[in-house]
Length: 102
Image 1 (spheres, rainbow, N blue to C red):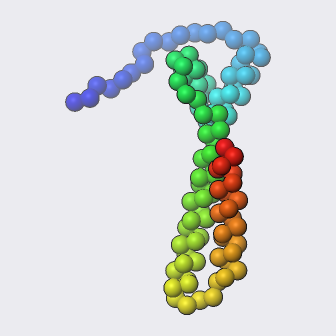
Image 2 (cartoon, rainbow, N blue to C red):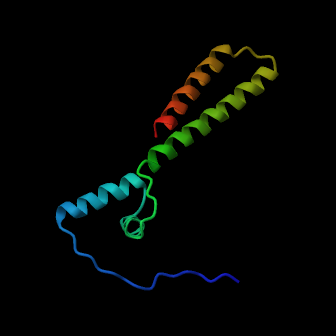
Image 3 (cartoon, one colour):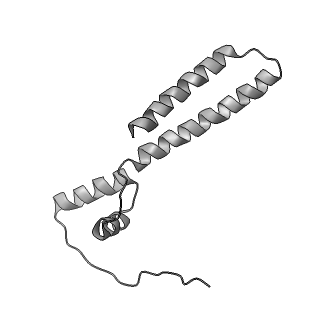
């Protein structure tokens, strides 16, 4: 049976306005709560500051993939959908470029 890890200790930290603003900005860009960001930072763990933009790009790629599957099914039924396929392909290329930039 695995043991459930519980955080039992509270550490109070005082920050000035600029430090709090920086913590809020960095934690938001990493998609983490302030305590989670602070904990990861303090422990020297990796923090992905582009997590939200990457997640957005992957969701977009997933939606496009679903559209491509639908277009493929229509193609197998003999329906002409070349324009839709070209538009979907362009969207895939755009989304892949966004992922590559992250």
